[in-house]
Image (cartoon, rainbow, N blue to C red; front, top):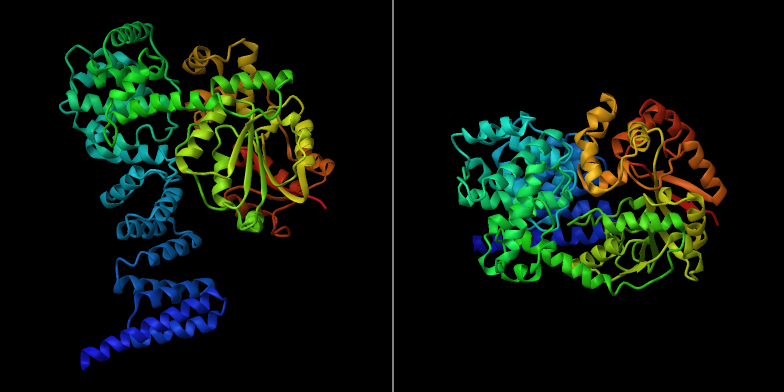
Length: 627
């Protein structure tokens, strides 16, 4: 009888909890609280305590929310939802480390939860560590091993973690050697190379750019060592060499081979390429193939298709070169079928097209699928919105918008078929069907009869010969009260970049790959120390396509906020909001409390003069077409 009574009580508690969620979903929060309280009075139910925690967070009762959520976890440590809400609360309180702990525990409780992995990485990417808990390191490794997790900008965080590892730090101390021969002399005397088999190191290498000159120098030396020890005494051992070569080839491919090469290396690479092309694909040694892949795209090899066919797939390390080859031929097939929307006739547009055909960017592997700003963009949710992405590049922004607004119809247009083919390939890989990619020029889009609810054009207009001409075309395509997301260069934020561009122009340095490598190698001769240090803090400096875009672009305009305000007024667009870190918005509101919505561009101009670095990543903002 006692067991039956317990079952009845538990059943009643669950019924009360279910009614609580029904009330919550319908906005009857006081009624929901009553049901949740009834549930916990009948039986200590972790879900009901979670419900109370959610309600108290909504009401701003932070202390009570934390207590209820912790009670939920104490009753069931695997009730992962409570960790997520706790993490959000601690983030709101500015307690980043406590938020990290909660999201990490949420992942441990539910390893299949990609949502918590995304949220953890979002916090971690801005941090560096002198020491890290091994459990947290294991959780981060799980995040890096999960396909689709957005790891962009994780480079410095990852580097600090491998540096903090006692065993790996001995290997990484070699980054202090600026000269290869001194690096090699110490490397050959090392007692152990086991660190190179560290899963955290191998998994992370090549998944993101590491914006650090010491790391680039170290990786460049490692690459040369791998090349020089082919066919000779291999200090690493066969397994470590194969794994390191494959992982490093992924990094070199991601950075588009920006590492400088010595004349000796160039001769050895040429010999290695000839050797491999004489072999049958079945007889090739994976380490040799991967080492060549550290210097050049493997798709350039004769019999490249056959090589990809014979390499094993799955989780094997050979999947790295295999995937690079297969992706190239898939994009070549796609390229032939890209529909033409407009001709490319403008002379400047043609020059820009050539640049992005040679260096499409960025290469990306994950999508950020959350609404960027609920207050600005949320009104489009659930509607059959017409969205135009003008200058879509490799398609990430277009596909993110398609994920955020699955009921929308997205048209993505770009000058570069190389970029478009990458975007189409990724759309197929992610199973996204509500995007249409077309080849065309923004300046010619005025012929379209269609009108759009939302137009995004990020980092594009300032590469037109006349930015306002393109912006005027896009404004004409926008419905009354339609939304627009724009990103433009700030002349104040790009002071060091402009100094570099001026030196490049005055010295007649070309914008081909060899010239870019040589400029970076000799940057101390070309630039003031302060300008160079600023450049070395920018991730774009560490990848060939991004560096070319940053410093060597064939066409670039820059704006200040007074000009931006004048442009908006001329076009009949209302400024809504900058897309910028919350910490910067908080600084603005603190400096200008009379403008809590942060829409006064004159005030923003004053803040930018004091802190020009806040717009180093461009003015990114939303605006709306007036009725």
